[in-house]
Image (cartoon, rainbow, N blue to C red; front, side):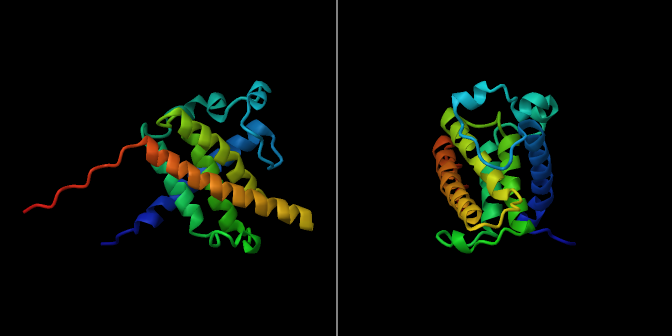
Length: 180
């Protein structure tokens, strides 16, 4: 009997989420990979939300697990990122980029499943940063590299904040008491 380690069992769903989310975001936004601020001006621009253009995805996720899925995706991406503070040395190979895209896709898919408004607002900050950090960059100038490193650092700060906001929004699950 083969047992799949918990992280390996998440690989396929995360890859699917990343592909769906990235395809939707690219098709809907026409973005060049630069994150847009989550402001009322951006919302007023008439750009439809990914879930608004794909109503079938509204029922794709399980209700009530938005924070758990977000934390899982962020942790999955963190596994291939250099330690905090080492962003200037980060290489953006296909694995790193796909895991960051998985975060963006997961946050997009969970868009209607956040436990409260602060979590929703924080996810709206993290999602475009993850997408921008995951984007393929053809410009190899020093300025472009510095910009990408700053985006990665901002992503990591905001993703950590999302984890904290999720923790505050969802009460801890009591652990089972040991039997006597």
